[in-house]
Amino acid sequence: MVLKVGIIGCGGIANGKHLPALAQVESVELVAFCDLEIARAEKAKQTYGTADAVVFTDYQELLKLDLDAVHVLTPNSSHAPLTIAALEAGCHVMCEKPMAKTSEEAKAMIAAAEKTGKKLTIGYQNRFRTDSEYLYTVCEAGELGEVYTAKAHAIRRRAVPTWGVFLDEEAQGGGPLIDIGTHALDLTLWMMDNYKPKYVVGNAYHKLSSTKNAANAWGPWDPEKFTVEDSAIGFVIMENGATIYLESSWAINSLDVKEAKTTLMGTKAGADMNNGLSINGEDHGLLYEKKVELETGGVDFYDGAGDDPALKEAESWYAAVMNDTEPLVKPEQALVVTQILEGIYQSAKTGEPVYL
Image 1 (cartoon, rainbow, N blue to C red):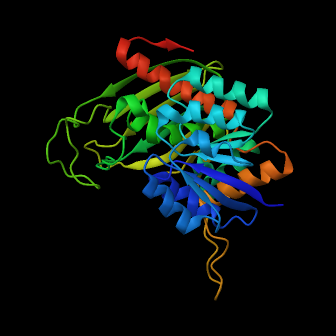
Image 2: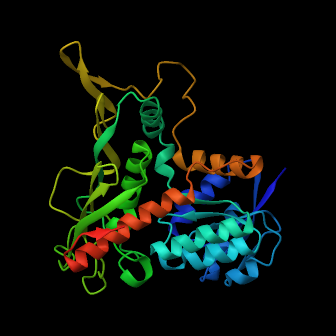
């Protein structure tokens, strides 16, 4: 069985993650590409499409085709309407993270999936890293005990994305918190298996965004166009009393950089992803730290299966579609991520805690 797949949005995330991965999934044919810039759709078709693949600038025309699934890879503000339209057109949908700008939009996406009976997942590929997969099995086995406090890390020293609409609050809904903080929060909630937040408090900062000619991985940003925060910090209290500290930044004066990482503290042991994966605890009156070796190595002519989270994500998603099973990233889980991020932004504006 071969699934016919359409792509809506042929920009950076499509070419950097989804399309190279999908090209390696044998059960998938990329038959339709849509982008507001027709040249990008044409290029994606030539590189990844079938011989008879078609291109569009209007997603509604793409959805008239007989497609099995659609990838929504557009700015955050369009995630909800495009996903809902694709579900209603009879397609399963992989929507890139974050799920939506607002929790109400995310709820509408879930309602559309339930109404149509089609599958919906969100692109949190960091769950498919080798260290993430291993740590999840440790948590699931109860080896950390009750994880009652955690830290979600998404800190860049100077790596502000200066292309596209990343700096546009209207199009994106925010800056590093909704862009990379969302990955760290998803990992943390998944490891804790805790999706019941009670309230959040947080702050968003516009401290370095006004700097002109600043050093940056992708060249200086334009302060006039930098309408989102450059950093955001949040604190989450869960219904069971567990706490999560969430830190995110595109530009901050710190050497302690780490992205899409989590630190977990449980009643039996703790885990730290920041300098390789390690498990720590106490045993027979002594403290221990166990470094987890994630590479096999040492075998001539064999590199192992490799660690390509994007490919693992694509394969897992289409296995769920073909076998009619639940995707690893459930939309209800992604909704909770959106609710927490939305609450932090609201708290930053009001200076008050936000109860969820």
